[in-house]
Image (cartoon, rainbow, N blue to C red; front, side, top):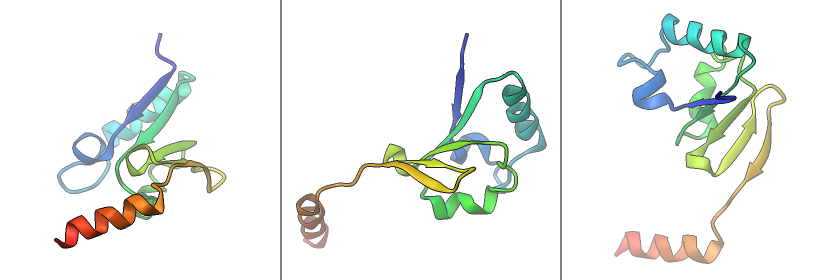
Length: 98
């Protein structure tokens, strides 16, 4: 039996109008009531999910930035972050300019 349900925002949770449908919100609530851990997993940064915080108030955790950040939505704190080494970022920046 599944204990964790993770969902993406773009093309999954969000409608074409960039809103969360009542059907999706009801499904999330039902999963939480069934004692499942429901987690948002998205490539978006925290700033881009803040407009949806009220709709997603029942969620505890979000996996953000394509897995680079794990964030506790209830305590509003970062649990884990993986950053690229500066040398990689500098090399990538030079490649992009060329």
